[in-house]
Image 1 (cartoon, rainbow, N blue to C red):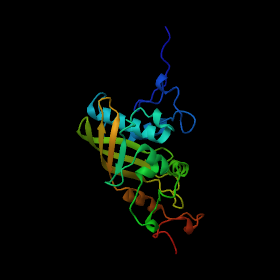
Image 2 (image 1 turned 135 degrees about the vertical axis):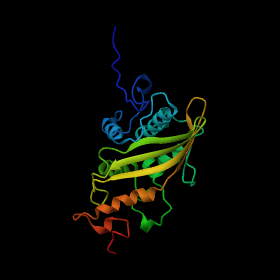
Image 3 (image 1 turned 120 degrees about the horizontal axis):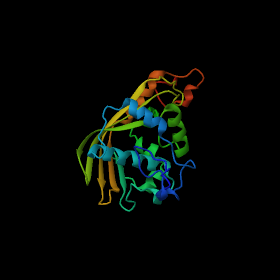
Image 4 (image 1 turned 30 degrees about the vertical axis):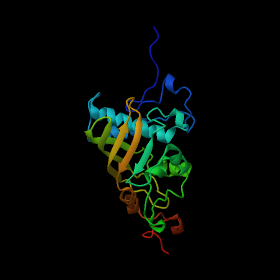
Amino acid sequence: MASSSIKQDIYRSFIYGEGEKDTQWRHGAPPNFDVVNKLFEEGRTQEWPEGSLEEKVQRLVKSWEMEMFHKIRPQDLKTVNLDKFRFCLNGGKILTIQDIKEMGGAYNAFLQTTLPENLRIYDPTKETRESAHEIFNTVFPRGFAFEILHVYSGPPTIVYKFRHWAFMEGPFKGLAPTGDKVELFGISIFKIDKDMKIENVEFFYDGNAFLAGFLSGGQRDDYSTASIGCPFMSTK
C-alpha cells in the first residue's frame, strides 16, 4: 500500500494537494514557509492546542494571507467568498479583490496611509506588487511571523487580537538594517459564511508606527538622501 507523500504546511491550508493542482502561483510554485515557521515557533507567545478556536482562527488567517500574497487568480482563493469579499483598513475605503489587485496587491492594501505624501516612509501609491515584494523580502529575509493573541468571538463574526513580528536584517530603501525586532499589534474582524469562507475583513492597527521602527538604523552611507521619502532623514 502506497504511503502519502504529499507535502503539507503545518500552519496553513490550500498550498498542496489535488485541490491546488491547477493553481497559478505568483512565483511559479507553491511558497515554502519553513523559515518563517521557524521564526514563528521561536518567537510566539501562545501555543494553541490543535482544534481549539484560537488554532482554527490562526490557521484561517495564515491561509488567507498566503493566498492573498501568493496566488494570482481570484478563482484559486479557497479562503474567500469572491462574490461578497470586502476589505477595510482602519475604517477607510472598502476594497474588493479587484481593487486590491489594481492598487498593487496585498502589501499596498495593508499599508494604506492617510499621511501627507512627504511624510510617508513607505508610499503604497508609488509601489507595484513586484517592488513591494522585493522591499519586504529584503528587509525581512526570515519573513513576517503572525500569531493570534486572543479570540474574542467565534464564527460567523470572528474578532481577534494579533501580533506580527520580524527582524530588520536587511536594508529598507535607504535605511540601514538594525537587526532589531519590529512588531505590529492590532485587532481584526472576519465575517465568514457557512462554508468558512471569508466575506468581510476589517483591520485596525497603526501601520505608520510600525514603519517608523525602520528609522532607527539611520541612512546607509551608499544611499542618496533624495531616495528617501521621509523628512526626518532628508537633508532637503
